[in-house]
Image (tube, rainbow, N blue to C red):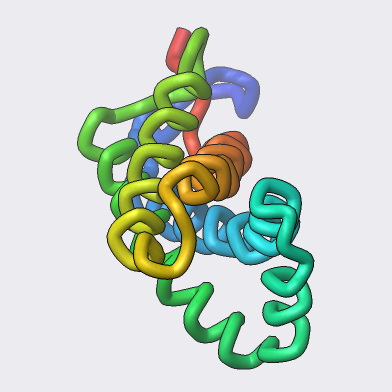
Length: 143
C-alpha cells in the first residue's frame, strides 16, 4: 500500500529537541538584544542606557549576546526537559520562567548599580523575548 504525502508520518511526532534549542537560543537572544535598550530606557527613565548601547555597540553585542545566550539556554533547556508544546496557556509559563531568570540575573549582576525595582521592570525584556522565541521554536501540540 502506498502512503500519500498528505497522510501524517511518524517523523512529525518526534519532538525536535535540537531545533528547539538552536532556534530558541538564537531568536531569544536576538529579541533580548533588541528589547533591552528600549525596556531599560523606558523603565529607568534614564536615556543614557539606550545611548550607551549605541555608543558601545560592539561591547554591547558581545556582552549582550553572552548574557542572552546564557538566559535563553536555561529557558530552552527547561522547555526541552518538560517536552513543552504550544498549547493553551503555554505563554504564561514561558513568560514567567523567562522573566524570573532574567530578573535574577539582573538583580545579581546589576544590584549595585541600579535598584531592585528597575531590575524587576527590565526583566520584562527577558519574559517577552522568551515568549517571542517560543512562538518560533516550540512545536505545536499533537492532536
